[in-house]
Length: 469
Image 1 (cartoon, rainbow, N blue to C red):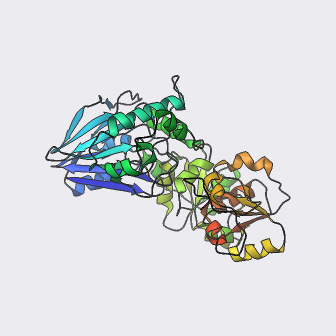
Image 2: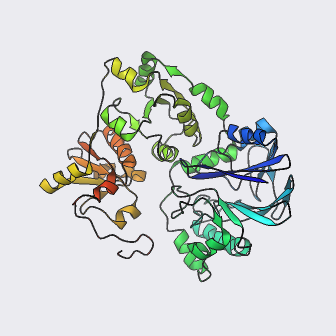
Image 3: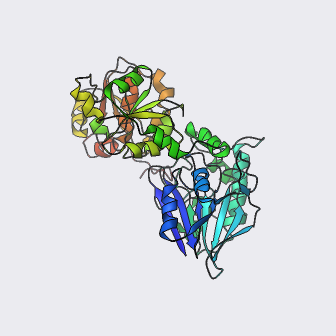
């Protein structure tokens, strides 16, 4: 028996490959099919089933391309309705994969069709559960993504409580819990950095599985969550209705643009997406570019910031990372990549074209300026991070909701921008520059670096208890 977790940090997402006796199953695949096909070929197996735990909202699943290329059957849980052929399983139904069995456990709550899959090993013993967004390590899925048909988020939270109590918690403690997401995903709010655990340990440590927790308390806590990123509903619809083949998307985007063609698309309104590191972007970039670095939670932030999935995009990438960029955009439904500038930013420089810059200073320099006089500071971390500890008088403008806060900001002021480590702050700086804010300074290293200076900070608050540390 092979059970392999394919964890993608960019999306904080876990897909799974299961193989036994020449047959294989894939659970919650990412959009590109080749990693799963290659695993099957390596183990000499045929992919028989593609199990989806629910209609994903935070990424476009790869089930359609994978099924087309392998002939595998797509399986959803009870109540799923799609615009393409699938097998809708019944609660308790079992599927044979080689010498293994996979049992369907309907666990509605995150969404109505949400399903957990229980894996039995070759000896017929329960081995693991694949919980999707029903149960995470340290948390549970948010219940506000499928509010329709008269269901409120409170209704769904109540269903989730019942699913956890009646379907998950009675299972054996030794089971391995394999969730769909980990820390960094917006599908929950307090997920662990660990990507799997035993069910027994989760019963001890996960707030949602504590025996004294009432249904009313659970509903209150589960629904106390920030709104989801804007792309979630759009990705869920793609997963439900269907989408273009990622192979066609990549082929179309493999388009090395010369300078004239790049400028033509720029003049026609295409978005210049610069995926280099924050500090490379700061030193010199094409005016009005949006910076979202590849070496971070790239896909999540593109989905959060770029409102229209059909936005025409032209790329500035590090050399050799063009295809990677296109695939990672496609994972969250951004399929309209026109191409990339051949030669990258160096080609732009060589042609003597205008370059814009963002002032980026070390935390120590920021501290000296702060001590010399009052500064206008934008803290673009999430509200919980800000509450835990921040610079006094800093204004919290979470990057997730920066466009909603623009009217509160003054273009005549000089803003000093920071996040936790320097990744989000440069995204924010690039947005502010695009919106006409000329006086912007990034604090390199973010709050992590600021804490090592002599700057005064608020008392540190524990994010779990809300009490001073």
